[in-house]
Length: 223
Image (cartoon, rainbow, N blue to C red; front, top):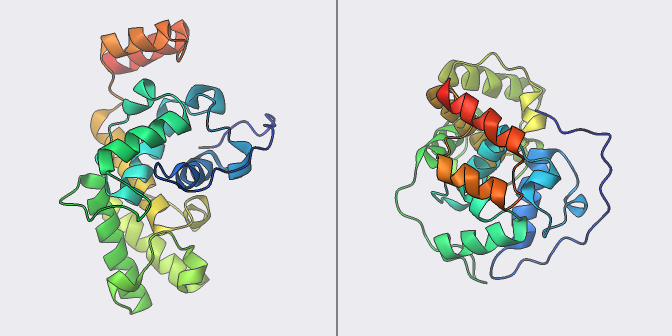
């Protein structure tokens, strides 16, 4: 998925990482939107930044992979800007200046991340925990030949027919896990995001969704 490249956003300084880790969260969002982090205003709504219902699923899945969290995609409607969402994430995961606390058992996103880590470690012939989930694949030593092996393993495991471009679209293990978890969620649910009617009405009332967008989500929900 791509965003409309004709839209040019002004540059904003990426916030320094602090207790709510806004800077890191913006870098995750930038990966999903395929834009530079400096183009993202942390106080602008996700909707105005181009995060549609499909990208919502991918973004939240990627966040869950990064933070070993259990955030639901509907949280973006209750916390509609990156800054607000970062504060919510801080509360949910108790992230402080020293970083995340060790997490307990996590959801399907973390499971995908663990599976990918094991597969990549087998290809690279290293210990799985030597792999930094936020490091770019080339930095980890994944060349074109090893990359083809990794993509083939992803296709076999997740029933995809992807080519090597997927490694550029999702350039590290956490981003790839978020993408695959989002794909699996869409496949299981048959729709991008499951929202209840009250949440949709609240989003329209607060100008976070248009009436047409809410209607489209209701249509997808009922199909």
